[in-house]
Amino acid sequence: MAAGAYTLAVSVDGSGFIAAWVAGFAFGVFLRQNTRRADSPGADDDSADFAGRLAVLLSSLSFLVFGAVLLGPALEHLDRRIIAYAVLSLTVVRMLPVALSLTGTGLAIPSVGYIGWFGPRGLASIVFGLLVVEEHVPGVQLLGRVVAVTVALSIVLHGVSAVVLSNRYGSWHRKAAAARPHLREGAPEEDGVGPTPTAR
Image (cartoon, rainbow, N blue to C red; front, side, top):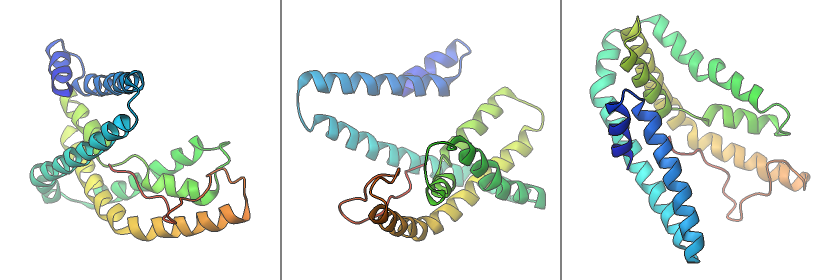
């Protein structure tokens, strides 16, 4: 379905990425409505579980292709400007807008920091980079290198910090929920394991 939507959109000079996203969204809505009508408990969970596992597999393949094809040439032309922007992109450029967007939600500072650090990343950057490449904008080679280095740095830093920061946030959350019954973040998980970062 995604491949068909992409192909149709590109054939009429539309955005294949947006078409694939809309097709996936529409398919998800259709699937949920039909499983409710069928009144089959567990079918919706099975579909969601399959979709989640498929998403992880396809994401892994995407990163494999990214590492094999795009990262090598970018590292050959590495300089201090690219590294500096990649670091800024993973910290200030992303975390500050996330913090501003969560203003007024009542979330505690640790939650805002956790969401900002482990928020949207990875594949989103690759997709946006490909959109820029499609448009043939000036400086596209430099932009491609910046995206490649930023994604590579994200894989390393988020991968290394995932377990440590998730455990630390989970520990904070359990203590905060025990001290404040009406914590905005909700009750702790029954298994005692804190929240973990979502897949890219």
